Amino acid sequence: MTAPALPAPTPAQTGELSRIPGTKTHRNAELGLLAFAMVLVAAYGATVEANQLGTITPKFWVPAALLSLLFLGLHLVVRFMAPYADPVLIPAVALINGLGVGFLRRLDLAKAIANKQPEPGIFAGVGGRQLAWTLGALILAAILLVVVRDHKVVSRYAYTLGLVGIVLVMIPAVLPSSLSEVNGAKLWIKLGGFSIQPGEFAKLALVSFFAYYLVRKREVLSLASKRFLGIDFPRGRDLGPVVTVWLLSLLVLVFEKDLGTALLYFGLFVVTLYVATERASWLIIGLVMFFGGVYVAYLLGASVGGPFANFYDRASIWLDPFAPKYVTNEGYQLVQGLLSLGTGGLFGSGPGAGSPGMVPEVRTDFIFAGMGGRSACSASPLCWWSIC
Image 1 (tube, helix red, strand yellow):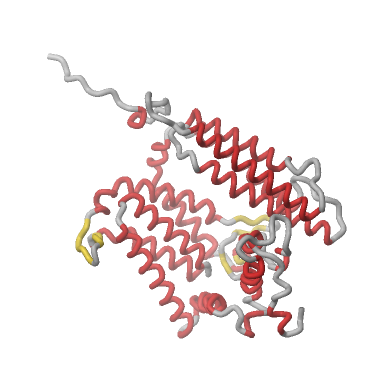
Image 2 (image 1 turned 180 degrees about the vertical axis):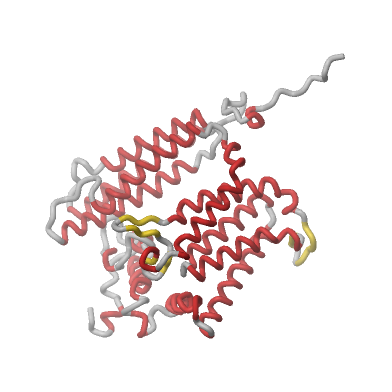
């Protein structure tokens, strides 16, 4: 007797990266989108120089060309190493990152003009530093794709990555403020002139763990318990992972004093959970849990203070940044960002125009206000008190 014939395994089952006959890879679409994105980045750089310098220098295209070359290299690696990858990801990253590099260079040009200094070099200033980091990241991404030929290998270390992610998130919380705090948020590790956010690496580790866990538990988490208002809600015993990540997010909120990071971690898990199960009930549960926890933390900060006091203060500034006690102090950054977007209108004042420098930390969390705004000084509340 002979063994029954079995169907040949597909590349997806064996982890091989060879193409499946008759299946489109969409790599040409990716290349076309990437070319379009880089044209927009080059046009943005030219407009920035025209508005800042009154002319377009012969080397306006250099940052866009460097980015194009490296992104093209990454595209070629993906074409051969991961032919079925999403064709939108690389062009989207190229466009957003390229515009960011162009905007930061716009800030460098404005600073050089204000200080009567020569035009900064391609790798000078915050724009040049961002460009250098981007190029390095693209090279590392390509190397990773070549080394890790089969993404399923990562699943072997899923729980280790989850633990590493949690440790990286909590390191700044246990460090002294002198080594971890910047502008009220404990998100950094600072040693001498070097600083880094371990949470940026934690995001990758936690996403890998979430993906593995949800693939293994997808069917269980998709089971419905009760139907309410036409929506199937999961069983109570399946809420354990959500509660765990919710508590981790609240710990970040309380001890690291940063609502945005807490929301990012929890939102990352809930959205991944929704993608895996296609149940809107998980989104509803996630939103209710997170904002319910935030509201309780706000109330505790108002009544008992302690570790919740900082969050209460920051939430109060967010609720009314124009209050006289905030507008020239803790709320100044937020007020200037709001006024910048307000005076810029729907389309802003154009690349390289306006006065984004009026927003103190425009190069970090308020880069959108700088790109979409105009001068904030003319409408600044400081002018209302004759301080401007």
